[in-house]
Length: 117
Image (cartoon, rainbow, N blue to C red; front, side):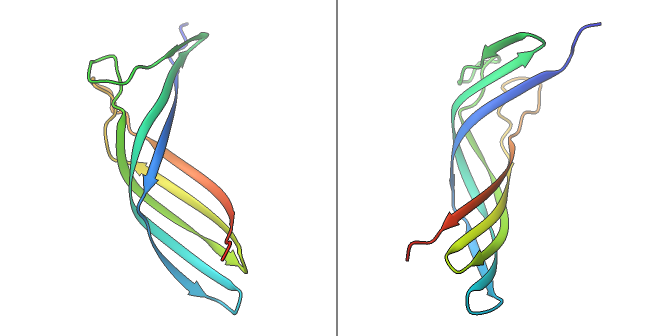
């Protein structure tokens, strides 16, 4: 029996433009929600099936992948004093494959940050 599973891994540099709403729970504690569009620029992509792995080229041909992605971001989290913890979901809206496959990026990010000001 052949292994028909295909694993894809793509690296994109994303530039988000989010709007944030913050709700204060106390003097130093706030909840926040954010949403907005993003644009992504492809850096690298790989496909793996069984033990065979190969790089995917960016371009407009049938066996290449589009370099430019765009989609929507949604996120939420908590800010305590100057520490920020959050989760973000990115939902790609562009079909990156130049063939009959429907290939759209999805990602989830969990992050921590420290506000300097």
